[in-house]
Figure 1 (cartoon, rainbow, N blue to C red):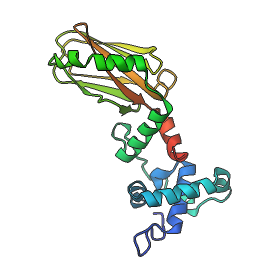
Figure 2: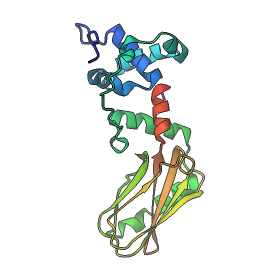
Figure 3: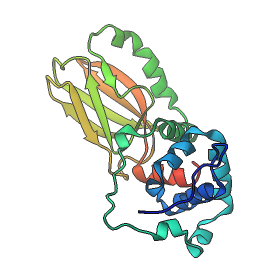
Figure 4: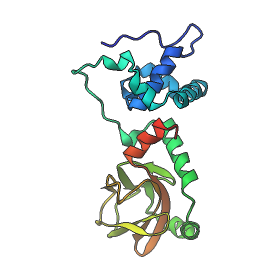
Length: 224
């Protein structure tokens, strides 16, 4: 079992060693190996997070690799690595990633006008799209759930921020849920997307954000 000095000081703040350890973990992509209490404090305490990210700017990756931290030299071959649950990402991290994407990708004015124009039509039908919600952040897959089974075949189009169709799907009659993979980074790079669902020739339009798993990790390591 790895040994580590106290994470917090008497005042309940992170010790200097804890902060430096977190910096090493960011550079080495080993945050998942840190004590859970340290990771939780990082996301819940803005002051501590800022201090750590300030250190991150000083400690570059070359320095970290030249001076290994003893905590990460103590490996446990029996340790089971829990895969990241991308569909239930930490809410604080999810909002940070979504905000970064919003700043990077401007809205498509044409598609935005269509979104506004279809509100009256969508309100007139009992068929509703429950998920994904507006501005949802999707990683590795997109899950559609409907308020009721489709009475007929549905056609789903996914467009990128420029309005280009990047994927088309036919959803069978009677479906109440439809999932599809977006793990192909070339077909679905990180960015803003719009989806259109045609039901009885009536379009339902909304927007979402896709972020690749690799980009999420890079945004964490580079302070987004």
